[in-house]
Length: 411
Ligand SMILES: Cc1ncc(C[n+]2csc(CCOP(=O)(O)OP(=O)(O)O)c2C)c(N)n1
Image (tube, rainbow, N blue to C red; front, side, top):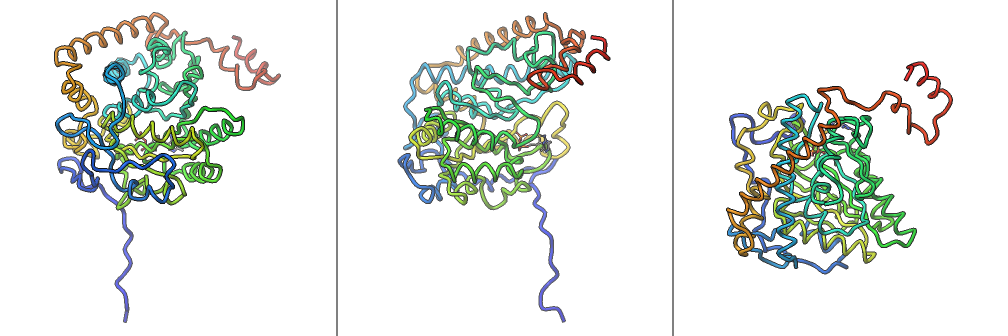
């Protein structure tokens, strides 16, 4: 006779599927302003509760409340809102450009704009970002990278700074502290830690910011990065953007069920926070806190940003096949742009009318940039970089066998 019932393998499933609404109670949302803010020299032990809570600043009425409400002036807030709007408009237009076959591929960050934009603003020039393909807000919130350059990369045209070698969206802008994006998930995470270690070895003051999605935390590189960051107290912010989905896989199957990604940091000896990623002010404040820790040699901070991937994974994806169509509308943390907009209206430094006006201006700006970029060609018209360039930069100087291959191609 058997003493125990038969074993059963547990396979996590999302509560919502097409035609069946998601139960978002698993998110465990604390109210805005209710989570304490420790001093930056806190130990990882003392952040254990913060890794399971949810830090928020903006309440339902658009007021900034609680200990995490940052010192940020109206000019910066307006800049932030504008950058988020620009990012969304850019994404929408580039998605259409893909449908028109002017570019082969695109990935939008719809619903996640606050995270990259606010952290980009909270860090200093010279701090190095190791992004994934969904942090275009870091570039679109700056003035020194033109949209024309970005669009040329997307169109793989004759002015593409990547010379047509990379899949669209895989930008690289050294001058903008934006590390080359790699298609291989998670590889940038230990690289960011190594860069931060190098900054410390050199006695520099710059810090690194590592970026990863919830799905990619399941890669071994994630664990390697946390170990090295903890051991050497590397000056790095370890961002985990939990947008609930990795293509069609719900975050539970990446290890998020009944726990949080922030908790992983605590287990590795790293101070960790779980933050409302759709709350621009919370993102700004938590990023500042983590940056201050890193810059004052207190070591790394892991931050899980809770958000929602509102759009398709990419232009190759159809989310209606695996999740409810109205999921984003029902997501309890709302829309980051609408929330910051409401706050600025409460402060009296923005209005519906100005919002509409700025929206129009930004649409015109993106359209003009697209027109200029298309002047250098698009995938549709075949104005692409010369085939001769595909042999360059494989090594610093071209070896004999590559020279021969180039000659064989006759270019
Ligand atoms: C090593 C590796 N495995 C698989 C893939 C294919 N892939 C590309 S994106 C993606 C999902 C990543 O999800 P997540 O990390 O949650 O980020 P998100 O796309 O949601 O921003 C996968 C599996 C890849 N690019 N690299």
